[in-house]
Length: 249
Length: 249
DNA sequence: CGGGTCGTTGACCGTGATCAAGTAACGTGG
DNA sequence: CCACGTTACTTGATCACGGTCAACGACCCG
Image (cartoon, rainbow over all chains, first blue to last red; front, side, top):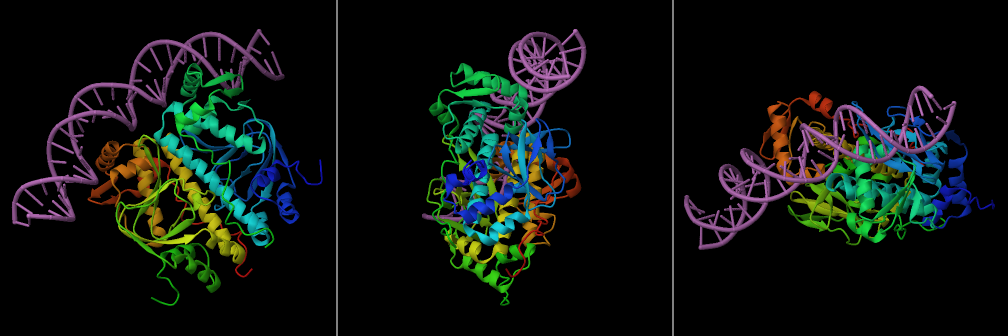
């Protein structure tokens, strides 16, 4: 509502980490100039399509996946409002992943070249974008660790905790119960499990008393114990900005 | 030997992707000012140590891993000469992974702040570093896909092909046979397998006629079929530099 | 109503883990 | 040069986690 453009959850996310001046905000605002609506299960882009755009999520949940020829699928990231989608593809001419909508929602597409502007005009925003890219990488590494070395129960616990932490960046008051508009098949494809085993694992967590379920939502009852179970580390809470270039540079 | 400082495999790697002017080369040279020797199995830094430095690999093989409390380990990347180590940790105050030497070798440590210089003074190098970071991410995503959704045979095939592709960036003439100074335990920890099953899988690939083994080295006999087996995509061959800022900016 | 998607349940199976013993290669010190 | 310890790799036997397949129920929307 205010002229401070805090109606953008993208700017809100950036402000979660560093102080922005109006010059920086202008640069960011350009990334959200246009927008496009998608419905649940729409495919935004496919693997192999041209990779000239990125997106800021304005509303809704989306996810990116890579698909094998025989239908096996790996979901590697779920995207929330405020997220930038597409950084891993920035280095390639063709999309390496497929982007789909998990709910109805709005995306703001912008061309790769818009990043030039930022690189040239704000080394501070550059450092932040760079860092956020690396946080994402750290999260993928956590996922790799869980997929490679952890049991189904540990994986599901970590997945739920990751969702909660990330949702709290733009919604700090999020309670222990929150919406999860993902099918168990998508969750399974994110964790290297089948939909069947996700179902069984969620039931196991319920009967352990660690979570509660209602249709489309979960309640993380024992945060502490869930964290202990999977050795969860919240990558998003804070980042190291001490080495960033100073505000006006 | 020449003044063009092509004795640095790091500069060689950067030059593989874009044209560098002397200004850019000076900036890169600063990252290799100091150097330190490590022996096989030395630990360079541990999870939880302060995360103020990055490294350029001058010689030898290293690897980064995350460790669970009970001893389970996930190796998430093997580092070769020319690689920059530590980007995923750039956003954090503490190291999220442990860095160890897989052979004797030399590292060139440099402080995070050295990247400031680059961000401020060369938006072109910034774009390249950013892109290389994203290539690494894409490779981790490939690994995630294989760990989450592929059989042991497919995983090992992909791992060997990835090593070969990456080694060819700085050594284009690398033959189908090359050195792999990694224990089967490290390979297993990279792929989410046990050392025992790595051994069995390598034997299976040999008896399929796809590879040959000699102590410390492998020979990829049927490139084509190996690639088909695991749906391998070479992420390193080329990156999209079309959107980069122009040479003098 | 009817069709589609999503989640649950049961029976069975297979990949890869686990445990344990044995072998080979290597460096070190005597 | 050999004895020794260590590390890496191999082999075999057994086991279990999670996959697969199939049927069924709940729910939603037209």
